[in-house]
Length: 253
Ligand code: IPE
Ligand code: IPE
Ligand code: MG
Picture 1 (tube, helix red, strand yellow):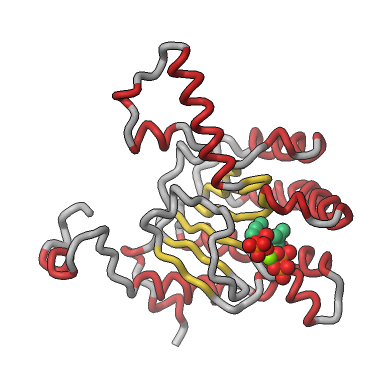
Picture 2 (cartoon, rainbow, N blue to C red):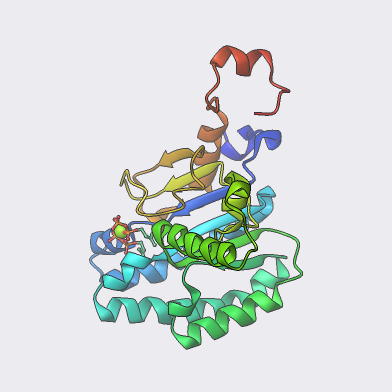
């Protein structure tokens, strides 16, 4: 049976976050170098972005380059930055046509100038689009983001714009890079690693986690449907008991 048909349209996650892992291992299995895996990984990005758009998902956050990835060999880092620029250039029109709006989270200023320029132009062009919000995590890590939020809060407190007693969960969230996005309900990691690797630590507090052995360049929309189906079969309790959830399904959790 087609998995797409079994998905419950009323139980779609609003926000899916993905750790796109395994490009290097996939390439090695094909007898190729790591870069080939990154190039092929772009095809998966295209397919998953299209699929999310068609499913009516509101937010898709993709971990494309972590703060720690700067420590990879220079040739790989350079190639990834070049791939980023070329991909944005190539895909921008298609994304525009599909009503996609692009955002970036992470230490934007640490990216090479040419990347910043291409990304800014693409984001400006798509600023009024109303379809899928595609959030690219670039030079991103949660610890960087949380420390950055702390710094901004201290600055606002010192400037008299923020009072200690006013700080709560919501206010804190407003200082994160993800301030304007809801938290992901589903987080997918490809390639068989069972870790979070400094990704959206705060925002994933109650996300359902889905791990698959499939490497990112082999991950396509059917794999996404499987992940969503699996998500829909889970009971999200948010600290409550199963009985509470089942007897009061209309109650906001
Ligand atoms: C994910 O694939 C892409 C990035 C982290 C940029 P990897 O490059 O981590 O591939 P593996 O995990 O080494 O196979
Ligand atoms: C996480 O993958 C970062 C991205 C997918 C961009 P890594 O391959 O860098 O993570 P680790 O090193 O296996 O934890
Ligand atoms: Mg990896």
